[in-house]
Image 1 (tube, rainbow, N blue to C red):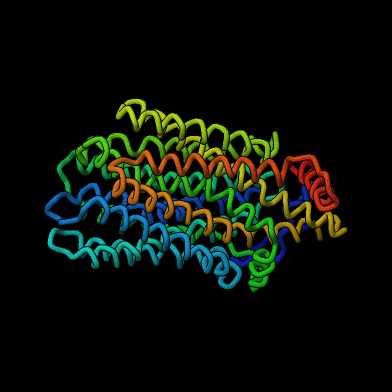
Image 2: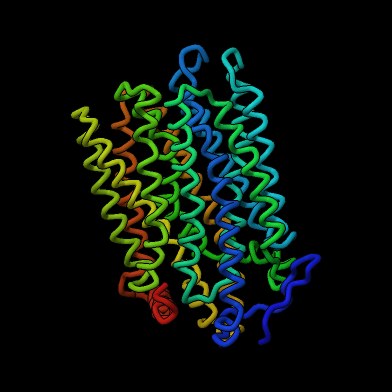
Length: 455
């Protein structure tokens, strides 16, 4: 295959075969990496805008008239919108093209940022804050379209690393906005200063996407892929597992600062000093999760990762009961790290699963690779959407736990049970020895997954 030649006017690449090593080594890798860099930038800012209310609520003291329950409800609804919009954002890449949609989705981030800038002041009603907060949810959609787009650029053996880097670079938008907020609070600045910083950054991200990204014609107009992915049981099994990893990451990112304020009496500045650490480490380690899955198998890494998450949660219950802030923060950070690691390993499983299904259908070579890319890219958006709903559940669980018991201990017990279920599902579906005909078929699929970068 010759080198891709996007036109100067529309930057469409008509032919793309990353599994062809000659093509990949000659020009494909360079083009894929360039698109990855600017995809990360746009997704990074999208995450920051999506999670900005986890920071803004720290600025909202008694003069705003909001109770802790109001704040948890507000962040829950922001998380909910971010999850729901991931579904149409998944289709958007096939409709508009990856580059074109990155430009559009980056520009849309101006709406919630400017709206928050306008209303962020004491005296604004809770309903108004809730409405403007819902707008911020569109930032969560950038993840789905970005992952779907980047998945199509890379060969199967590189997907764990590439998807982990893309997602990790986006996830790190969470601690970055928290660090910026820390600096602003420390300098006695207000929330409008934070919002004013991000408005020009959004414009920069959109312009750079226009200048340096490409569209893949092979993905264009294939909206049926998402329908086919939705019919596959593995899409929903992986969605359940992703609730446990990414749902934890984004849910804790929204809730951590509020928990420190409500349960441990931290001031906004004291909370801000601590809240960024967990999301930062969890974001940085996500590519490591993808790399480990490339090397040892995604299902195996995911299984043991859930063991670690359950152990960390059990220790959090102890720290919460003892009201020990040092232990609480330590184990919460450990839980963030493990959620990030699991994000990388679970997403690496997806391409391997659909590549295995292609082999089970008797497909070979590029035909099998194209089938796997098509369905795995579509399923990633759906899986990302369902996974983000876990963040809604976490914030609602904290809200109810504080209303009922005055602490977050009840919520942590519920999370512990859920991680146990995730462990059981991972083992039963992807690692257990088969005993029936249906399980034997699953085992054949698992062997194919192992041969293609070990799921």
